[in-house]
Amino acid sequence: MDKIYGNLICASLFTGAYDVNRNEILPNDDFRIIEKWCQSIQALGLKGLVFHNHFTEKTLSSANPDFIQFIRVDFEGPLSANAFRYLVYADFLKKHYTQIKNIFFTDIADVEVVKNPFEDSFYTENPMSIFCGDEEETLDNPWMKAHSTHLRNQIPDFTSYEQANSHQQLLNCGIIGGKISHILPLMQQLSYIHRTYTITNQTPYTLDMGAFNYVMRTAFENQIKHGPPVNTRFKSYESARTDCWFRHK
Image 1 (cartoon, rainbow, N blue to C red):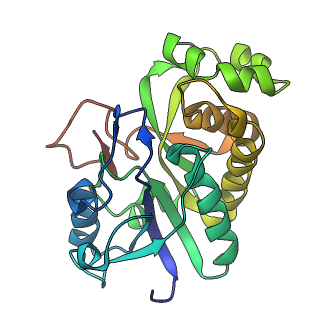
Image 2: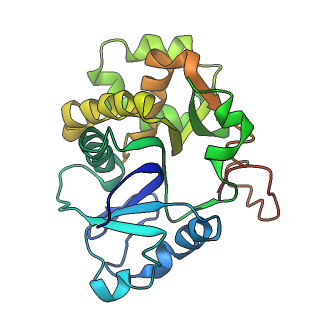
């Protein structure tokens, strides 16, 4: 792997375990899952980094190494891939803190990079911000209530956070980024929650959205920037839209 430096867009694909969001076990060595993500980064001349556990060297050669690098990670339970990635991200950022300036972490199978976020005025004019995706729902919706049951039962102030933020727009952890000085402490807090609380989760939910909204609203509320120009409307499949940095489904 080449030296890590500057601005990065990262994602992960850990296979071999049941994916509750897709209701399937993803194949271990299928480049098609990440192809659009890789192509979108390459088209913009950006640097991408993929954490994975099963790609072969032959499959990795499908990506242009001038733009996309890969780091192999051992992935085993009990955490889901959705939660486990935050432990990987926190460790990675701590190790490479002095080499990275700005960074985004995104989902990989359903996110494409449309514009270079690091050169956009909305990014450069908001250096203290953490940029993330969002959804049309508010935090107070049936899916999030069910999703967050385990965290609500484990974290002492989780219920009060939900009550105080019930009207807030739901943030989506499929897009997270900003200066590394802000993103490292965010990833460390998410890693702590998943190592401490999510690890005993017995519900069918991954808890990544619950943990992310909780940490953002309780620890980084004044730094949040979401919606255009960060992301298109979630699950609206706005394929012709070019005014946002990321297209999320």
